[in-house]
Image (tube, rainbow, N blue to C red):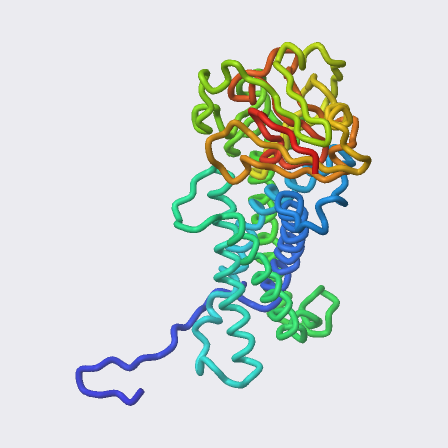
Length: 384
């Protein structure tokens, strides 16, 4: 702008940092891209297991029994690592926010648009995901559908960003790339760049080691920063939602009777249920917050209860809880789960009668299933 008496001349800020360059941004972008891809794919698995469309429900697989534990553990562990990578990437590229003129061409406008959407959506995803694993929701919207929708925005903006930046990415992908050969600045900045990347890698490692123990139990002793610790809780298992929080009182359980609806409906008291053939399985509880823990469960096979109700082969199941209200008070289970011999209406946990917080008098336990669908305080089963 022309100088006027008493007014300063406005100029874009100048940056002297040597590592705010395309080579550093590309190196960090490789790691961040892998992290976002893993989070996106494992997030799709979690979403479709929790809220499957009707056409998919009968076909959801019950095996491997540890499948959801692995995918959701990866989702949360890699998502936490992505926080470090995202802010390191932003540090490397933030001087480009101040380029002048701000829009030089259609391609440059698309590039800046993709960056704006990617940064906004990426920061939203990692920070809301972080608050979700801590079970703190300081916003007016429902976390699950919004987090899922914004994940698609992140995926689309990443693809657009890669398409727009493809020439620079190719030029700086490796030390042997044409854009980085025999460049004095590249030789000068090499040690500093390696130190930066080692520092970022160390930060990612520290975050992972101090949180992944909530699902990878061999590292449970190092689980210092995660909100859950394996082995801590009633009967040696963590609890997300207590009986009190769910509104399940001792009076509600008094005189409990299981109702099974089907072609040949019937009911069972807790004593009658305990007299049926009991089976013991070892399965993990794996929650969307990322924690998981193996436990021994004892109870009656769901497929035996459905057969007694005259359910035709290939039937699914609807489960209703005593819980007063909640998004998962009613749960649908496809035929793969209902017919799996590992799927139980559990009465005991680790050899003891279920505590109130773990779903007394009866709860569902099934393989390869999110914890929110392992319905507690079951009062009714319906053949579907």
